[in-house]
Length: 394
Image (cartoon, rainbow, N blue to C red; front, side, top):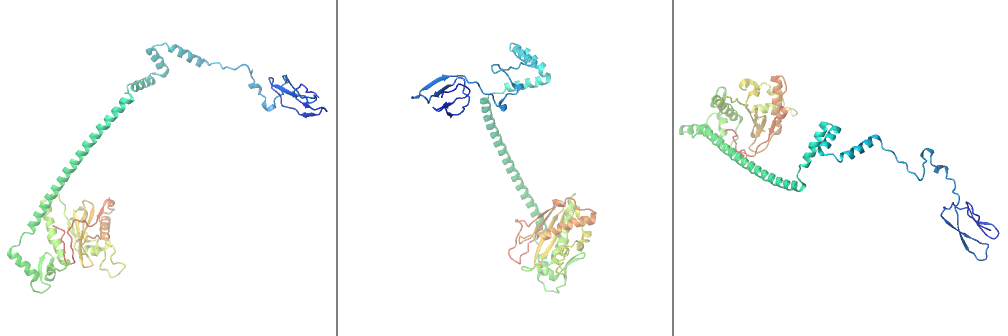
C-alpha cells in the first residue's frame, strides 16, 4: 500500500488493510513521517505538504457583524471633544501661569476657581512633616506643662476650700456651744435645790411639778430623769413644745426671713402607723386619715411653709428615736443613738407630705421624686447600754 496525500493520513500493511484511521488536520508547516510497511526494510520518508483546512464548527464561526480582517486592526477615531482637549493641552503647555489661571477660571467658574486656588495655597504653605512632628512634640510638652499647672491650681483651691470649710465648721461649733452655754448656764444654789427636790423628793406621783399653758409634768414623770431610768413621753413632749418650740419662735423673731418650725409630739408617728390598733392586720400600717387634722396646729396652719418638722418616735415603748423633715432641702433624716434606721417610718413621712398636699392644696406634691430619705448618720452621739439617753437637739 501507499500513503495517500490528502486531508487524511493513512498507514496500510501489505494486504492493503488500513491500520491507522483518519487523523486531525496537520498544520501547514508540520512535517509528517510516513512508515512504508511493504518494503523489506522499513525506511522513513519525510515529505512536506499543506493539507486543506477543515471547515470550522458552526459554534466557532465569527458572527458577520464582528468579522474583520486578521491582518488589520480597527482604530476608533477620537471625538471632536477629545481632539479639542488634546489641542488645548498642547497649547497650554507653553502658557504662562497667569494665562493658565484665566483658562481655569473660565472652565471652572470664578467661585470654584477661588476655592480650589485658596486650598492649594494653604496646602503649599503647610510645614513639612518633619517640622510638623517637631512642633507637635513641642505642643504636647507645652500642654503637659499647662495641665500640670492647672492641676496644681485645682489642688491648691481644694485645700483652700477645705481650710475655709473647716474654719466655718469650727465657727459654727463655737456658736452652737455658746448658744447652749446660755441655755445651760451653771445653776445657782437655789436652782440646784429645786432640781434635787423635783427628782428625789417624796410626794404624790400625780403632783404637778411643771406647767405651761395646757401642758404639765407630774412628779412620777419628772423622776424618770434620774440616772438609770427610762424617760417617758410626758418629759419628751413637754421639752419639745415648751422649750424647743419657744426657742424657735425667739430665733424667728430675731432673724428676719427665717421660717418657723413645728414639733409634733410623740403620738404623731404612733397614730399615723396605728401602732395601738387592736387589730393585728391594721397595726403598724400607714393611715393618713388618722393624722389628717394634725396640721391645723402648726404655725400658719401650713406645713409646706415651715423650715423643719420634728417627729419624735418611741419604738416598742423601749427606745426613743427622732425623724426630722427638712422642708426647704427636701430631705427626711433619721436619728437613732443605736445607729439603726426605720426606713418604713421615713417612707410613711414622705407619703404623709404627699397626702397632705393633695388634701390641703388640691393637687399632687410637685417634685416629690426629688425628696431624699437619709439613714442614721455615723457622727451622732451613741449610747452603749439600755439606760443612756441621748439628746439630739441643742
